[in-house]
Amino acid sequence: MAGAVAIWSSIAAFWVVEPVSYYPILGIPGTYLAFISGNISNLRLPASAVAQEAAGVEPGTPKGSIISTLGISTSILINVTFLTIGVFAGSAALESLPDIITNALDYILPALFGAIFANFAKDRPKIGVIALTISIIMTALMNRGYLSFLPGIPSYAVIIVSVFGTIFISKKLFEKGIIE
Image 1: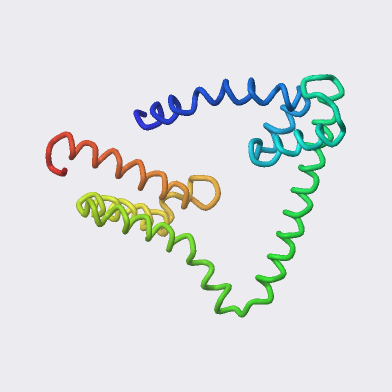
Image 2: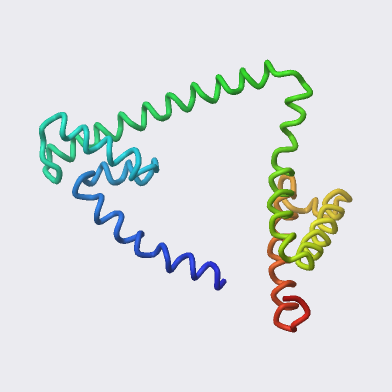
């Protein structure tokens, strides 16, 4: 909870500042489109500004708002088009790879988790042992069907319990002075 409060307090100003500062350039419909589609400061805002400049309209006017909306809409359409092409091209590329390579791709996420675990465990090996123990227990419970009451594949429960269980147990042991 303390971590969540720290993060929220550091970004809370942006929840107010961004909409207020972007609104004069984007207009009402542009603000809506930009916040729904994302990439505001590095994609939607420049598209809006360039569209208004190319059309020779002033930001903050009704005409500026319409041109802004057209610029943002165009950037969204182009973005979605290229993403769709990329997904289909990437899918085709993956299908053309040999089975040994596509089978190896199944290990990307475990390798990522392993690298993150190793990075933190080298500094605090006792916490690493706690995390490893909890994750082994949770994986065994999932593999034996004890988590089958959860919807879908319950690997998310293994991750959630492992992460928060490690945090909780480590915090308690830290408070008791057992680990540093």
